[in-house]
Each structure stands twice: as C-alpha cells, then as structure tokens.
Image 1 (cartoon, rainbow, N blue to C red):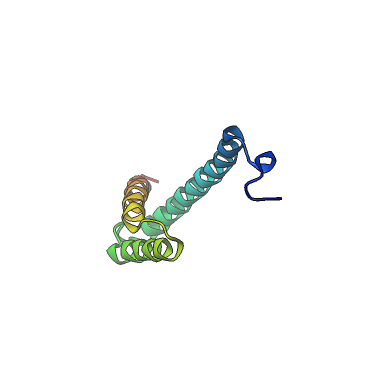
Image 2 (cartoon, rainbow, N blue to C red):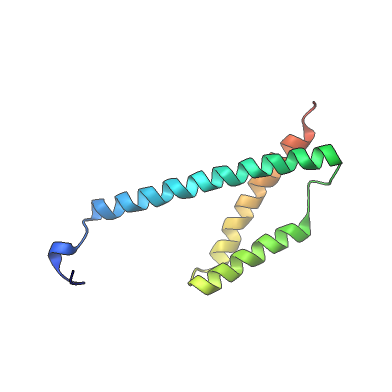
Length: 101
C-alpha cells in the first residue's frame, strides 16, 4: 500500500465511520467510569467518608496532564475535560451519598 495512492485513500464517510466507533467506545468507557463512581458513592455513604477528596482530584488531573504531555494532547483541553468529568461524578456521588436506604 502506497501512502499517497488514491486507490488506498479512505473516503470522508469511512473516516467518519471510524470516528463513530471510537466515539462509541469513549462514551461506553465514560458510562463505566460513572458506574464505578456510583459504587464509590455507596462505599463512602456506608463508611461515612466525605464525598469531596481534593487530593484524589489532583491525582486524576495530574495523570491526565502527563498523558497529554506524553501523547501531544493539549494539557489545558484535558484539564477542562476532566473538570467536567469530575463535576459530573461528584454530582452522582452526592446523589448516592444522600440516598436514604
């Protein structure tokens, strides 16, 4: 396969289809992450652990920054992305912790 051979180039629809597959995996992993946060919320509620764990947030954000640096992904983008993810998972944990059994 030659790199610039027009016969081997993917169409925009084929590229978008590949992107759709990646998006589906990304969303499934995000759902799985939120499900784990629900389990963590139950753990915290049962053991009277405070929902907010600032040191853990720092660890997660630092790991994302390192990943960005290692893989050429904008670290500010990853920080903002994780801010949103952490905001949602904290909201979910709050709901779980506040549930009456």
